[in-house]
Image 1 (cartoon, rainbow, N blue to C red):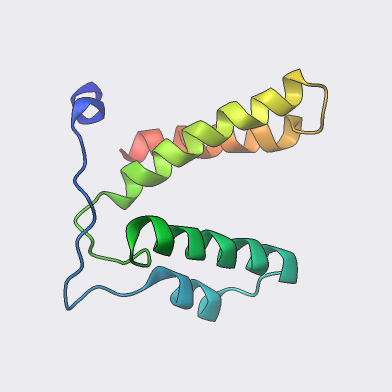
Image 2 (cartoon, rainbow, N blue to C red):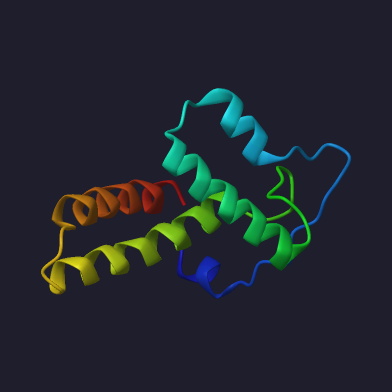
Length: 105
């Protein structure tokens, strides 16, 4: 696994087979109004930053991208714990998710 961490991923590509992730998620899962608003903001930010939506078949490893994001979230959740805010349960759940992802990597 260490070798994979040193390999850089390239920028996303779009093919004719690519599908937008957000609309499919919205179709499949009922989200609270607040979470939907947050996700919409993240979609907008992604469009501004990358000039495209998150797409399937973009040439990147979705598993690696997810694992890296969850790893960052573990640190943020632990920061909450250290600052005496809520976060123990969330941190522990994120660690469990990260452990499962690492096994799949």
